[in-house]
Image 1: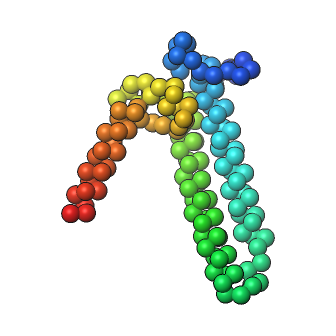
Image 2 (image 1 turned 90 degrees about the vertical axis):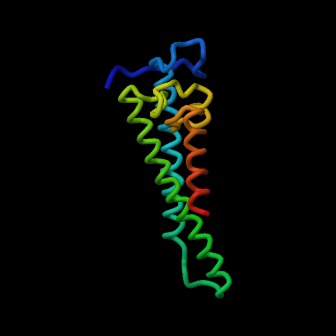
Image 3 (image 1 turned 45 degrees about the horizontal axis):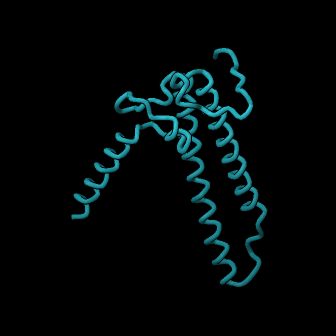
Length: 143
């Protein structure tokens, strides 16, 4: 790993800078690490809530409601687990020098897209093509 980059206070990547320079990479690394930490903490909270819950209290309606809530929490936790995997992949791309570039075309993904979705692996054009192919395959399967 190279030297630690210290970002200026309130740093935001800018189009005026070289794309994916060391400051931009560090900015996105920190953004991804913070997001990952939030998801891990929320997942741990979910686990603790489910563990601490007393299951045999209340009537059938209350138990049914609690089962539904638990099911939703577990689905959310599974979504977080998958998201954490994508964050880890993005962090690996930063380390490999591939972060910020489309996996399909090699083009820049763009700062605005990465700011909105820091785990993006495709440029907007490539993402739209992928979604279009998915819709076409979905239409074929339905007919």
